[in-house]
Image (cartoon, rainbow, N blue to C red; front, side, top):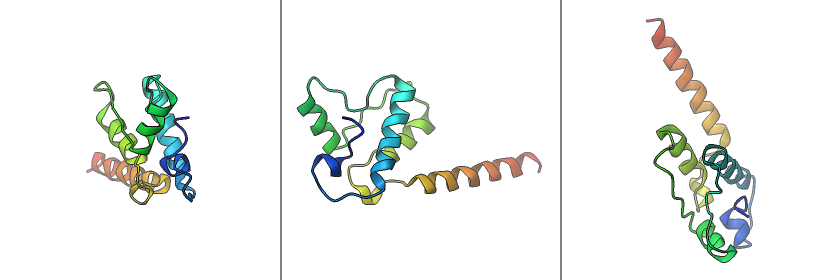
Length: 102
């Protein structure tokens, strides 16, 4: 159920950004072993999804926590796209590698 984005849960039109949501859920689960919107029952989980009520464990590395927060946004228009993340990561790696040789 966590893989359903807020716009899907509320039966709103949606686009490719639902895949970004799913990637955020998958990353959270891979790093914590738990679903991000776990609750006592399905209704509470759906409410948490709709509001993107994300509780990040303090054990998550800062970069991972930041990435997950950018991927799991209730408002699709402010969700970071996968392409933006890839380009930013490549640019950061290139900048870091260039600094190694200076």
